Length: 484
Image 1 (cartoon, rainbow, N blue to C red):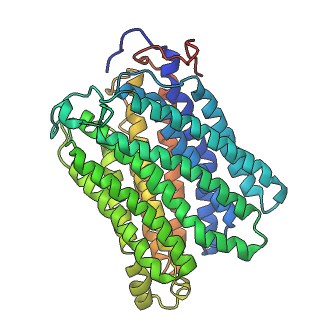
Image 2 (cartoon, rainbow, N blue to C red; image 1 turned 135 degrees about the vertical axis):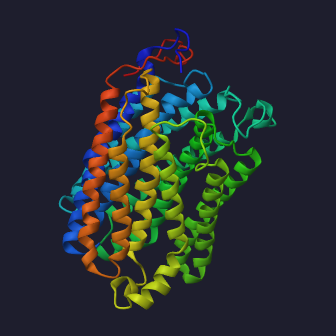
Image 3 (cartoon, helix red, strand yellow; image 1 turned 180 degrees about the vertical axis):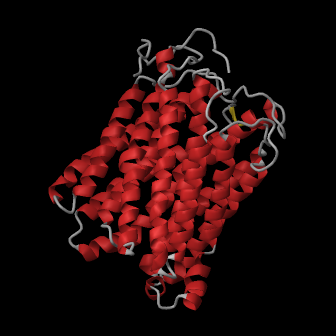
């Protein structure tokens, strides 16, 4: 990838360093490291209720907004304009969005963790949530404006593809856009929706009149929030980006536009059915479980059908160090979806037969199995995709040759081993508490993997990006944008 002329400042082109380093700092402090500590405490006490709800949610918030959110924002600000050889929209707001997002994460997660000991800090946590919403709004506006500004990317023809006219359909307004942009736009929409939902949900839990009310709120409304974050924000973004980079960089099949958009409609419908069905199931009776399960089937079927059409496991025209991350990530996605579809079987057939005296069988819900599903998709799928994409984007922007770069095999093996231990042994803890310590060790392996990967990327980002934006970015007042 060569330098595109002499326009667009190198300083602007290094914007990924701000967001990616922020994501690395977050995951290695209040993200994965904090999660490993929480997991160790759960393992020592052999109970998933050994850690308070607010602390667990504070950690989860840092992972979604800091690890996933900051990397999505950095990728969007840096890469979306390059897809179209276009100027980024409103670039001067990007640095402000970063600092508001980072400050919001620290306030929101830190103050929620302190809430059981100092209830008065709830206001500071809500201030953090407000900063996050503003930052996400700025990013969503800029990213959507960039994606909608140019009708069709000037990508070369790829295997399974067709002419540019065939890849892009013309809308009533005369603009032609590829299907993957619709995925990214939907993910951006869910990014903002989940941020507002998260703030409202936190306010409700922070001011809950007692423990019973707090647990009722969590039981009724926390799972839908996670669905929006995992499948609405993260999965749709990854599926959209995959449809761009896998054919463009690895020569994999281009998914037919009509098929891709049909899958997208099904995935959004599945997400809505899952969220609405869950709430109705909890509040109006288990008769609504069918609506929830129908949404699960749509999410599983749509995501796996799209992965199959992309040929993620087919022979690639080119290989690099990131490809193993991508392929393994989709393997974890398939496993998580299979486990999700089989959740009723585990709960009502396997547990009742093999562990009828277990807590999960008695209360009718397996925290262990449901948490294992979450881990398979968040660490196995989402985190591996982040690691793979960043490992490709960072050196390319700096024109660092792939020759001589680490293949990242050690962090790749460690994070997969840790994820496998967590998913497997956590599921087995339904049958015997003897498996808790093995699940607890998994967090150490995952943190080690992220630390090795993060240190490698951090060093590469010490060099300034050498590939400027295709044209000088400017705000509406016409002055050149300067980003930190």
